[in-house]
Image (tube, rainbow, N blue to C red; front, side, top):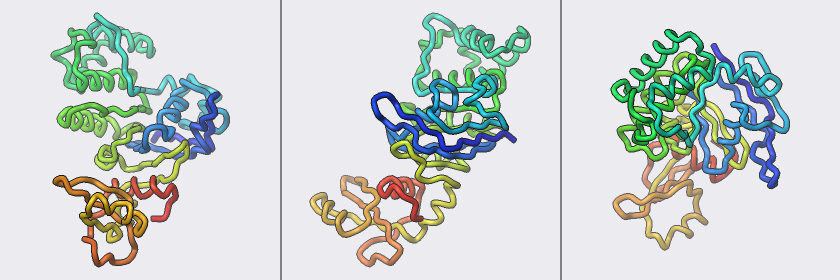
Length: 293
């Protein structure tokens, strides 16, 4: 069982932005979802874990070793799929994986070939192994990114916004891949898509302004809100009035009509009861920036 423990991590940039503020998390095998809006600190946390930037203070302990003092320890066991995965032009999928595998220390030629062919099959790119990666579609490129992240059989994989911009079919295919690879290792999924965390993750955290404002099991948080979410269709001009009167956690247009979702412990006679969801949890916590559920 792998273990990643983050304690009181701090990072402040030269422009004054406090990107990480006392971030504390504990992660074990499985997919851990890291949710938050743009600028929440998710990417800063990912870059710090993988050693692309230094923390000002705090600890990152992976399998008993403080990786802030020994960066090589985690890099030797790490797979990373960044949000913007660049590729070399005019190089085939197989040759690029071969090059990355060598950089990762897979020196045995037969072992390297076997691993590359196995991974290309896993991500359904075997028939495209001789094609240039820069000609791949967005979904194919992301699946290639998963393959390169898996080279060397890492114990921890970090993926940053992996499904952004993908069509629904490719998104489902990529999520299936992540679910499969998350059974025997740590996979940290950084995203702003609540649905991906709901579908894939047994543990999660929500970040805002560099802070972790909620962490635990998604199912627990959803169950805690059951019977406390209410919905109503209103006129757009009434929105500010309802925001002033009620704890409106989100709003959306359904069939061109504005619908609001309200959090309340008591029965709302003028509202319809709504089934709780992780999206309700997300918006409630973000809007209040504190844990009350």
